[in-house]
Image 1: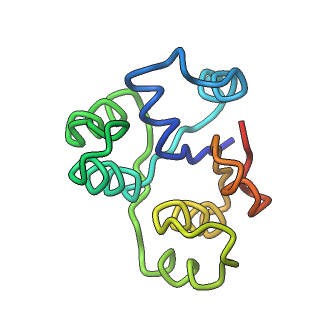
Image 2: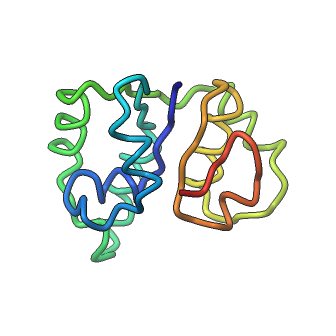
Image 3: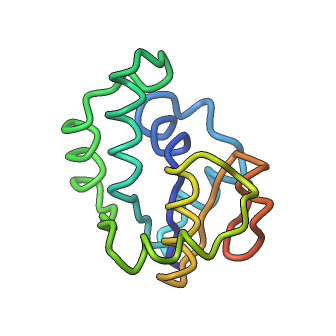
Length: 128
């Protein structure tokens, strides 16, 4: 199964694995699953970290390198993804989360998240 991992889960898996919910751990540790991260997540970390958010104080180049080195697949943001954002209902206002939902739908992959508001988009989004 292909799984797009939301930004908070990426950060927790990299720096605070004890914070990961059990459901996320099960999915992330399954060797049959292909783990994806979005360029939008790196962008989010860079923007929010630059704004001083304490939960986003991460070196994005090291984060990216660690994900790639551990076999995660990087999903670039494409024009098709940007167009897909426009068809989403306004359940969630955060542009980064909206992009992740659009990417999951466009690519036919499951997006896992801890954000119940993002999970309200329904399939292919799954709360863990």
